[in-house]
Length: 162
Image (tube, rainbow, N blue to C red; front, side):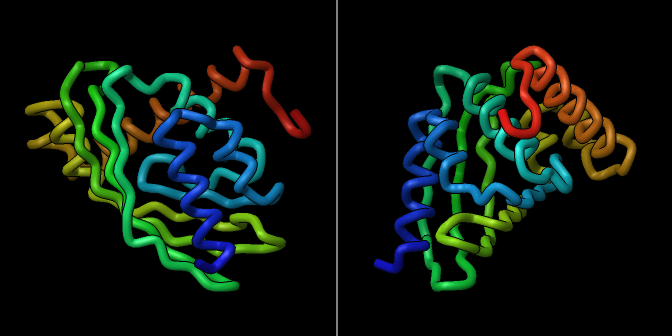
């Protein structure tokens, strides 16, 4: 197994256990993260996002992963979390494909791709199914996520070098 494949296995195995410290140890100091909800998180903010998501994960949170492939430069993985969305209690089964770039034996770029409309339909119910494709609803989801992350950062007193 390539060392970067082992790194991705470590990342997702830690995620299954809601172990943000181990997940974040897989990230380069200057990591860049992007997904349809959290755009352009860099460095400590990307690590703070994983800390928030693992801390807030519902007791029923489950994660499977597969298709890990990596070489010296890049890698891919497929992962599927299942959980009750905290605001509605609705069951979400997200389907995510991830792409990675590596530097110095760590993840330097992480990009997750998933269907935000599909996610909104599951998480928000009827309003998400019928309106989740609209920029207005998707921007509201992003805004609420960003606000939640900022509140988590303030509550935990996180910042550069912490």
